[in-house]
Image (cartoon, rainbow, N blue to C red):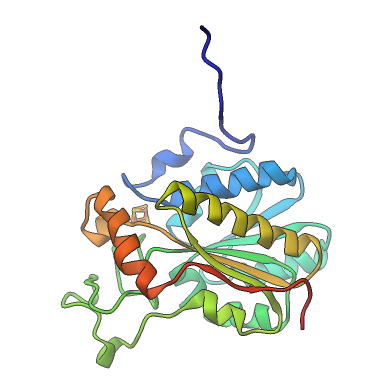
Length: 252
Ligand code: SF4
């Protein structure tokens, strides 16, 4: 009996070499796939424009066949603001790492939410600066060893992990904020729903929308890929709970 194909790649997916750029067990390509699925299911591939930050997430430029712009480090939201104002009919979204969004790009992030820009951010949180060798990031867990905190993050010296999705929810200009993960099939589906909702808020002209996604970084976590999934479940989610933190139809 002929086998029936029950799934396939979304039309915007270029594979290979897109996913081949990443370390084994990296979950960035998984999130790329979630976003690509959402774009296909919503039928918006001709309308989206992606603003890329700097970091491992930016390799998505060889994984998707859509309009994209590579931005200066931390400035994807500034560039996205300009583009959305010039082309308001476009669905503009930024793809950023935690370092790009809440460290070097924190000013642009706060400013975009303050101005209630009608754009969407998807932030990949792997709790370190993966591309440059695993340095401390604002999201690094207490006790986590990085190349700049070899004895582990110490709150008395380096402070506490930044809770970006919760922060985003406190801004009036933000209408949607959520945090998901892709470490189980159920969470993959939930994250897909969050990203779809975030895009829909922009399409409806409601305000700024934000989705943070927890992702594994095996080489910088010094763990095999399967143990990274346990770490997400037992450590990351304890610090960074999953769910929706804000869901409004308009700015209130
Ligand atoms: S360094 Fe980490 S985030 Fe970057 S590609 Fe490797 S696993 Fe992924």
